[in-house]
Image 1: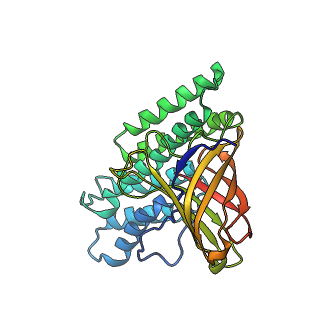
Image 2 (image 1 turned 60 degrees about the vertical axis):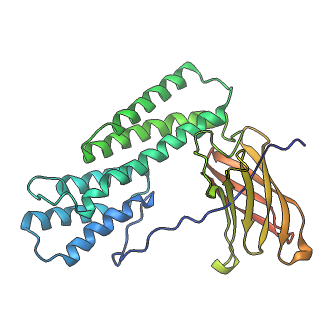
Length: 302
């Protein structure tokens, strides 16, 4: 079997900043609303010299952000409702207020995810051609996202981004029926860095946190190795080594692990993780670890 691109697979854990959170936090599709939610609720709880319009604006925003939202467009809808009173002339908040300065970065994060979905889908599609109908839908959806990115009013941008993402979701689902597995796990637009970069995170959920296994896949581009140095680590049990990725079908791929160290040492052996791509950036995996224990879980490609 011919092996594909040699690389460093590292599973990275996404950690969020620790902040003083409300007693109950709403469930959102993405964690991107956490910071503005904290800024709003913290200001309401700690600032004593708010004007009546300011307190009313913050209360309205907090109510919107505390709603549970299960989809990205719903997240953005709650965001739009929240920022409308916060940005109103009546409230007249200082432009340096945390819940003001965080608005653009929050929208940037949602937009960036949408751009990545488009980019990875087209890379996975490769030389396969789209029908005229799907191609036109994709063109209109990406144009809608570009218009949203150029909208300066935060509430209007949030609504425009939600509309664009709805359009993108519909067309990308059609494309994913044809192809989801990418040729490579390292995107061409990903900037090279001398620091370790996350490529793939694979997580096998155990009965408890102490039994959960995570594979950490990283890639480095040091000056003496510009083509990339690909390695992986994992825990429970600990493994170290190198990896290659190979696409095996329209929706499947495999990560070949060349183990150089495992705990205990006498359990060292090379093994594969079989990937099933639901989208070009997410899916499920099965396989064995260095201790010959069966694995199954989920993965994310960055």
